[in-house]
Image 1 (cartoon, helix red, strand yellow):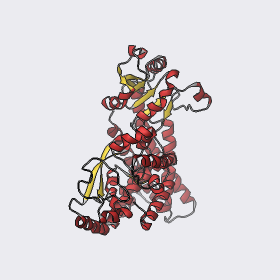
Image 2 (tube, one colour):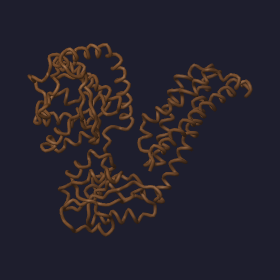
Image 3 (tube, one colour):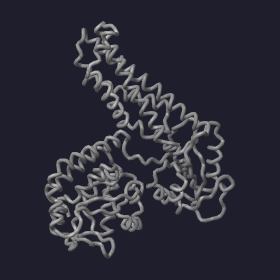
Image 4 (cartoon, one colour):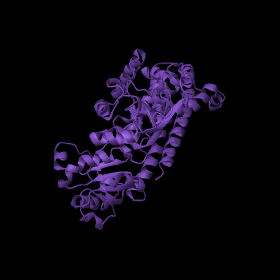
Length: 470
């Protein structure tokens, strides 16, 4: 399934709907409120009208993006889509009303109500009908098994077989295209092998997911295998897949099972989403805008730092090396060089307060974290966020995981320039300190919000001003 093509359909549809609805609304206002003929109206298509046709559709696309509408283009509920379109239209029309319509010359206040109602109706109808057609088309293809999501089963015995048979026997497919299964316990008795290929064991799961382009994982383990559930989740937590599990009677009685489809098999969905979609999108937009502004404002300071680094010791101005980002994806991080060249000639080594590898100018930069200014380029590239757990090297992640397997949960989010752990604990000098700092980042994950991000940024700025960096 081509996600980009499907997304493009929604974007074009929404753009044209916004364009057309504003044009029709403009003509309506002229005819209804000013009693003009079509000939007079078309002669008044001035620069304001043209600018409206250029910028208003972009405004609506921003509203939809910020609300999370474009997040998952293949798993849409038509009923939920109608509710989301209504809510987005209401918010967008209110903004346009106060920004553009409130200054209209009117005969009575009823004209305002009429303008609001007409623009809302035009925009909703012209937006929702094409969306409904596109969503219905993709839904029917999924139901008829023309399209599907590559699915891996974790489990190999009675419950796995039961889930497989139940899903496959559905008259209207829920979209699962079974690729194979992996076993949890080390034995050769795999009842599911009669129906699906055996792809390997739990230790191979990440490689199997990448190799087979898996989009969905269903955990269907036996009661005797429940002690492995923590290991399974830790293995999957940094994989960008939808994770579902068969519910126990306890899950049903405690209300943990939620229906997402009337005809589908009841499964618990284990969500990667730690923030509401609209907050996550606003966070992404804010990251890029603030990073661009920061680089522009700090450009004179950057020039000073570049000269300082160059004069402090021989070597390049920027230091770059590989870090591990969201879902375990490696990326190259950029910093102003604060150490002498070949500082890690003997292998990876964390810095400390009295580290002789740090130059005098490097120590000055680190006190105010000025060496991390190039991190803003990583944010603009999409590898990092302003706020998030600090990215680590694979070498240290492997050592942290041995002591604290739950560290892998941090890979569910983008790493950040600053973090709650950085604010509360500071830089770590060894793996044990990394593990101690981990609890603060785990607390951040449980409380992620734009409000918390703002607080962390404020505390970070106070740290920089007071020069309490290591």
